[in-house]
Image (cartoon, rainbow, N blue to C red):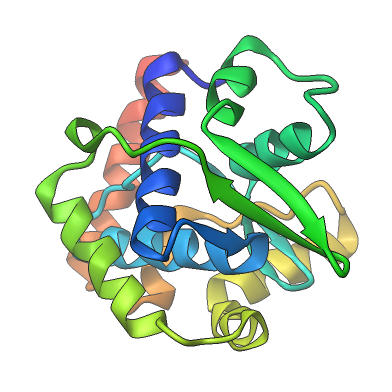
Length: 192
C-alpha cells in the first residue's frame, strides 16, 4: 500500500512528464519514459525517483501502481482506493482506435521533484523525443526486463523488475549496485 507521500510523488512525476510532453501521451510512451527516468536515476545515484514497482509485460516495463490507477480512471474508478482516487483526479484517460491516452488535468507540484530528478527526467525526455511507442518498447527490452520475463514464464506473478537489475541495465558501476543492495538490506532489516 502506497503512502500519501509516495502517491503524491508519483502523481507529480507523471504530471511533469505529461507537461513536458505537450500535456498528453499514450500509456506505453508514458510508462517507458517513467522507466527510463527511473533506470537512469538508479544508475547515477543508487536511488529511485519514485516508489512504483515495474512489471515486465509483453510491450516492456509497466509501473504497477500507475497502471492500476490510470486503468481505474479509465473504468470510472471501479475498485479504486482513496489513494488511487486522489492520483486519478489529476488525469483524464481515454481510448482512441484501441490506444489508451492520458491527459493532465492539472500542473505538477514541482516542490515534490528535486532538481537532480528533474534534470534526469529532462535528459530522458530529450533522448526519447520523437520515438514511437514501438521504438520505446523495443528500447525497454533491456537485460532487467529480459530477466523478469524469463522468471514470469515459470510463475506469471513473478514478473517484477528488480531495481538492481534496472541499474545494471543502465550501466551502473559496481559501487552503485553495491550501494543499492546495502540500502535494500537496511530497509528489509528495519521493516522485518
